[in-house]
Length: 338
Ligand code: KG4
Ligand code: ZN
Image 1 (cartoon, rainbow, N blue to C red):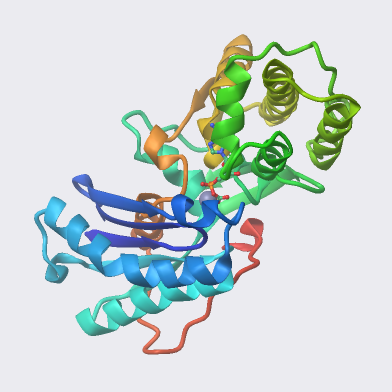
Image 2: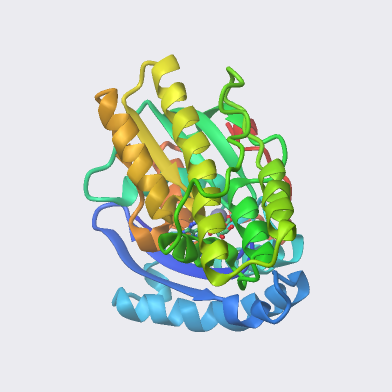
């Protein structure tokens, strides 16, 4: 079965073709980073309009790479939420219209379920059950995953998501958008510990997170004196240490509490090298192992949506083309999935 995946929830247009027998046949992503850069963040209306421009050329490219035609597609999976309403509607309309034209089923997919299952696309996929750490621009969550579709929320951020904290702090330090990768790069040349930042909720005894105070602490440090390039690097390094220490400690605590040795990490912040290093070390200490998606599948992409859709279809979920009636869910809690 060949499932086409369509992702358009934010600032990346992703299209992919996944074959349940042969694996990923083709995938292509267009990132809008350059377009939004001038505004210092994602402009929703511009994002929607760009998705409209990109979808057909991306589909053509993926089909050519996969040496397939539209007629080979058996089902279309698309991100129905959470995300920007207008951006989601572009992908949903495209997917539903394509399914209608080809007389095949269309399947709405939860964006975070896509991220969460993306490590299963790797060469050595983890076995169920496992703990998942979802760290993206909009979410920071720990989940217990029993099977495809069964996600128990164990803890999440009470305020800013980890990626959001990276982005906002990067902005404070005068770095461009998207801030996460830029801050991580600056941190490489800095020394942590010279500035002292808090480790929010490290000892709270639960699996909740809070990152908004960190950004304020960085602001206070930045206002205390004129920052040199070296100061900025040291602040970035300390910020990265603070965020990754809390994320790693709570992810390992979740594994211990649930007596599980597999930890899956997904979402954009999962690309952070320091986070990976800390998680690998901490999980090795408890005899566990961390599973990451391929680096190119860490950030938003169509492959994870095609894969999540295919797993649901394999589980016997019946998908039907909505024949013109469909909706997107800009807010959609993952643990409300069935
Ligand atoms: O999963 P994703 O691509 O989009 C959402 O669904 O949100 O995650 C994007 C987030 C952004 O906040 C970005 O700054 C962050 O992931 N990010 C990083 C790194 N690469 C991306 N944060 C820290 N270090 C990185 N290397
Ligand atoms: Zn995402």
